[in-house]
Image 1 (spheres, rainbow, N blue to C red):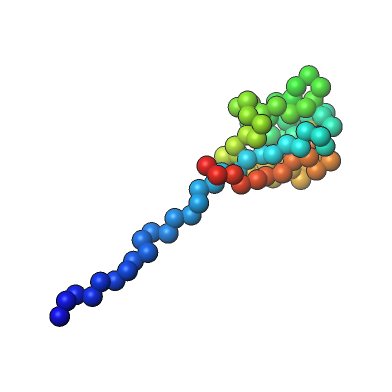
Image 2: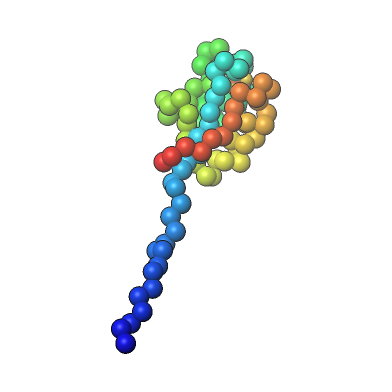
Length: 88
Ligand code: SF4
């Protein structure tokens, strides 16, 4: 009798994604609150609008900073920030 071959699915792989901080530039009113709450990722321009320190439009949020980023999102008075998952 021949050995039975089992089909194995192999290790499950999840689509890789990273968390990014999305800034709605139309909604943002400046003043720099988010830059104060998340200085590791953001710095204010001269008018208080947040600039990503990495120069991107949607800075990547390291896992260690996700709680701080969530606080910044929740504190934005005009809901101009949100965390989004993007492909890695
Ligand atoms: S907290 Fe909101 S409104 Fe204030 S600078 Fe940041 S994104 Fe703009």
